[in-house]
Length: 164
Image 1 (cartoon, rainbow, N blue to C red):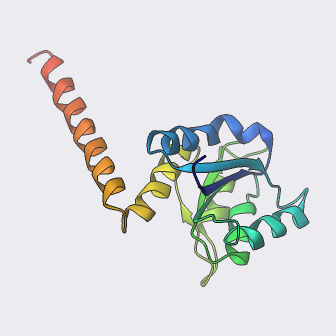
Image 2: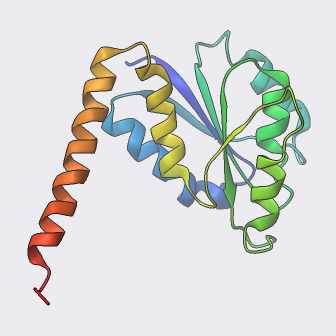
């Protein structure tokens, strides 16, 4: 069983379809993860315990998705020294995701949260790969291959365009 290195948490199970995008990225790069609901508002003690114990449990990075007021990523970042990547979620009580985005991106000094776009869990997953890749040559090589494949896709797109 592979070591769990990334914690993926969300404020509600309704956020799971978005947050699964991060799981797909981590699976592609064979990075172990855990996935759970940890609500800053409905289960504050659970949130505190999760963040306070994360490093001791072997986590290296936390991806936290939240909608509405979106306090989860910032509160977790206030508790742990691990990097936290916030995913603003456009949820049923959201103002088109803007409230979530601003809640996460506007953290006060000394409490950084790397923030991706609204519903951008795929990019959060990629950040969770790129951070350890700074000291892992195998991950860097896999990321370089992914970038080459992206470039090849664009080349093929251009080859299929009608010439005007």
